[in-house]
Length: 89
Image (tube, rainbow, N blue to C red; front, side, top):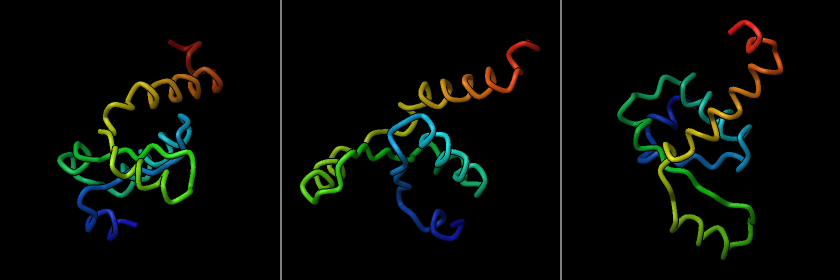
């Protein structure tokens, strides 16, 4: 995975559209120690249908992954609240 992420130009995040998908791919990118410069350039593929027309349309409309930081933040807050860490704050 590290080798593929290193070769990718740009990295395209095609994880699930829900907050868990955002977290999962973000965690993989962090675990693989992707550089800050490359992380800043990650693109987000928003796709909910795998037919060829929908895929082509989504590929033509990539968005900046940083636009989805609020989605990532919401899932992290949810995890913290479920684990009881919010009570400690």
